[in-house]
Amino acid sequence: MISYEKFWQTLKAKNISQYKLSVYYGVSNSQINRIKKGQHISTSTIENLCRILDCRVEDIITYIPGKAAAKSAIALDAVAEQEESAYENKSNKA
Image (cartoon, rainbow, N blue to C red; front, side, top):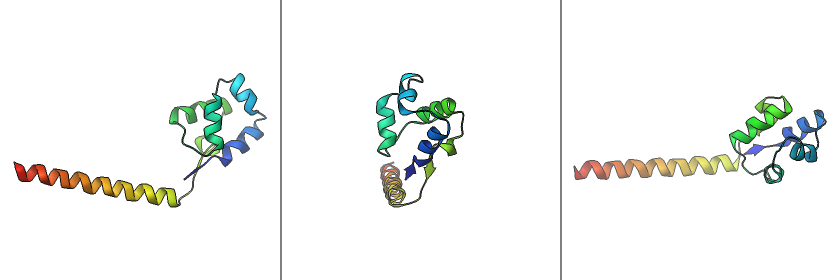
């Protein structure tokens, strides 16, 4: 799971409001809302925020291991197994 708690702390420390971020720096309200809701944002957006806030990625996001990470790992395992089966089927036909 990705946490944006540090983003809000950095924003406050830099004395930049959400309004200023949107109006003066051109960050869309939808991106700000995605951050508020803890949803995914692109690496391009993260890069832009780092440039605006003159900070590092670690000052914006934090990775917190948890259920979301476990679900992703299970899904990746399922895809990996599926690809191997598909490969085996192709090999058997040849």
